[in-house]
Length: 148
Image (cartoon, rainbow, N blue to C red; front, side):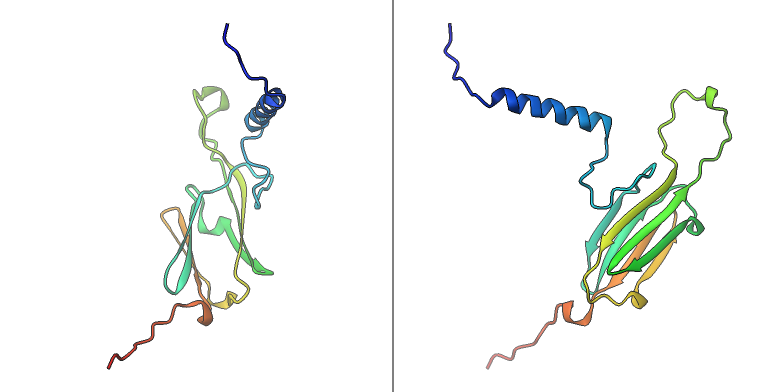
């Protein structure tokens, strides 16, 4: 018979893991998400830094540019819209249905010095690109130093 060290909180940790799995299975989206909304789907985004701007790419397949709204209020950029389901096939004819439809909502906090008038957005092939120019004081400056 092997000796096993008794861990008084082992059962509690196991119970917590079970509860976490239960909630994860019941609610696949994280409730801790800062931009969580009761929407049918959430488009994926990539946000990256360039020398003079911050770029946001949002994948919006099946969405037209007329169905997308970009708003800025209190330094929060909000991306809203809707992907509409085209009912070409009766529900009882589906073998599998994995695509999500309905409204979507994403929100991103911007630095306070951003000028909303300079933000540009383009929409091509189902990808929305938002270019947010950096304010002058945030751009990296290069200074030439003469060595004598």
